Amino acid sequence: MGHKKLIRFQAIETFPNVLQHPENMKGNWGDFFKNSNPIVLELACGKGEYSVNLGREDKGRNFIGIDIKGNRIYNGAKIALQEKLDNVAFMRTQIDHLTNYFAPGEVSEIWIIFPDPFLRSSRAKNRLTHPRFLNLYQQVLKPGANINLKTDSKELYDFTLETIAEQGCTIHQNLEDIYGKDLAKGPLAIQTFYEKMHLAEGRKIYFLSFTLPEGRIKLPERFLKHEQTIDRG
Image 1 (cartoon, rainbow, N blue to C red):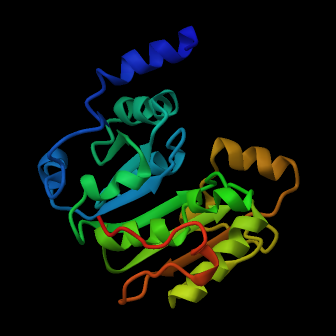
Image 2 (image 1 turned 90 degrees about the horizontal axis):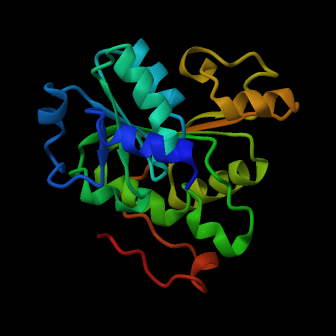
Image 3 (image 1 turned 30 degrees about the vertical axis):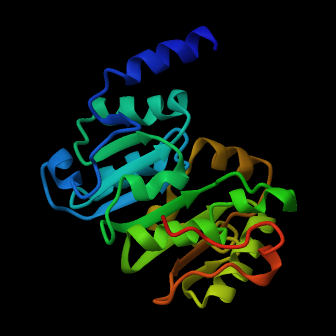
């Protein structure tokens, strides 16, 4: 581990707004934030730009950035502390452990910002809009809650469209080029470090906002050769 990373890992251990693999949080986030405001998650949050900016703009909701890489979380957590954003926190853990930390219906919205698209078909199960993840989200989201995906990957965008169609999800927004069509308004105007790089390279940015169906998320036939069932935890 590099010296800079080591310093950051040591620092976040002292940050009151960073939890690392915490215990007994399920159903108890109101105690942590000292309010009963809705909870919004930013998954694979990286440097936490969305969590911080959303927290700045909306003090009536609590935002939690989740990532396994503590040296990245450090950036957003430090800014949130400096600006005294009490409604912004970060958790270091694996995303597929969400049900260990949130009770059914405890989450009101999810943002997925420029996640790894895992382009190899053999790694499709790692995509954050794969049915196995949608199944996890369904267990912690309020019914009718939005899931928002922002990506520069046409492959992930197309995969997500196919997946949510198979699951019977409801699409609320489907934007194929938010900057080219001057649609970057409100939260969509927030630009992460990587997004700025993608835009400088002339890439299109895609956005999908959708809600999950009332029925159980199922594993489509095309994935059965890799996985037979989805474990509901």
